[in-house]
Each structure stands twice: as structure tokens, then as C-alpha cells.
Length: 314
Image: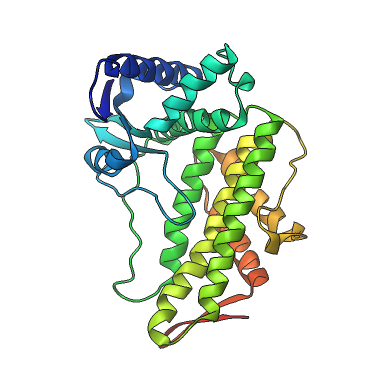
């Protein structure tokens, strides 16, 4: 495993690299990832994060109005062997070091909740490595484009793969370290999703012509998938496997009192977890069923006609 530093080298850079190596290897051993399968671990500050990501994965990073990327894993097949590379935001390891110093403890549960959340990125990314090894798959290179026009099937294919990948990573990664962390993550996610939904509705209300319809349809359909992804991750990371009864907490105001819709999503998660490492068509269909019920609840209608897709909202 090689640790790459995407920041200005100085007298303390060797110490930082050793900290990164120790923390990552310790988490990998706990999760069951063979450290010999870890190729490159990059640590980058914001101004170099995109370059690090492109160097190691060839991909762009998540930095939207709603979500900022703090870690990204890519798994590549090399002569029949999976090799993993991960890019981490440098602030993660700053939080780890601060948590250890302030609490005088290696026990993450003793750290403050923000430090717990930052550390959590490390085992989550390693969870992707473990999942890819269990399923013997490399990282997906699928991209979403509409060169031939809007296709709802393409939206479903793209986002369902992301959801399955995230759920499977959460299967192996740590569970939230404390009830305080669970509450904090719910609160953060709810604020983010409420804000993104408000932005989506504002854009729909400002609809000004046919040329914007493709973008609006893509954003609306993708937002429903985003909601499902975040709920599914929360289910696995907080409750799943700890109790026979899973408490489904709505993560956005519009989906309060939607027990039917959330229960269908939970059924889909159950199928994915129970049949793992096989991903069955039954599980994928349940995800689509959940998407359709959430979409209907949000007031979105997608209809395919001979001339193409039509998108309505109310």
C-alpha cells in the first residue's frame, strides 16, 4: 500500500503518512480487507482533491450544492486480482487526530459527533473494497448522459447500481458509533434533502420552456433515487442487523407518514442483504417499485409515448 500526499510536503508529512497508513490498515483488518489488495491511498486538501481523484480513479468528484465528496474508492481487476485505491479528504485525518488528542482515547465512541462522522468515511470506503471482493467486481464506469434524449430506464440503471453498491458497502462497514451519531446523521440528512427538494420544486415552478424539460425530468427522477440511496444507507448503518425491528425514519418532510413507500424500500434492502453476494432481479424490481411510489407521492409523472417521454408535476 502506497500513501500519496496531495498537499505541500513539510517536516510533518512523514508523520501524517504513517498516521494514515496505521488508521487505514487497522480499519481494513477489522472489516476483513486484505491490506495487500490496497494499492494507493491518497490524502488531499480541497485544492488538490480533484487532481487526486482523477489521478487514481479517472473520475470527477462529488461537490454539488448538496453533497461534498470526502472519500472515493475505485477497484480495478489486475490479472484476476482486485486492487483498490482510495482518495480521502485530508480533513478526515485531521478529525481523527483531533478526536484522539481531545478525548485521550482511541475509542471512537468517546469522540465528539462530528469527529465520529468524519472517521466513519474510512470504514465505509473500505466497505466498498470488501464488497467488490465478495462480488468479484470492479468499480462501475457507467456515466449518465442523454445524448439520445431522456430515457427513464437509463436513470433507473444508473442510480440503482449506486444504491446497491452503497448498501453492500454499508453491509461490511462500521455501524454508527452512538445514538448521538444516529440522531446527528438524521438531522444533517434531513436538512440536506429538504434543501435539495426545495431547490427542485423552485426550478419546476420557474419552468420556462421545452428546452428545460429534459433537465427537470432528469433532476426530479434522480432526486427520488437520491432519497432512496440515503435512506437505504441510513437503514444499514444504524439499525439493520442490530434489531429485528427496523425503525424507518423519513429523511425529508414531504415523505412524512409514508409507511407504505418506506416499507417497500425496506423490502428491497432485505432482498439485497438476504441474497448477497447475488443481486437478484427481485431486489432490483422492488427498488423500482419503491421509486414509483415515492415519485407518485412527490407528484411526479413520467409517461412514455411514441414520440418520447413526457414529464408532469403538480
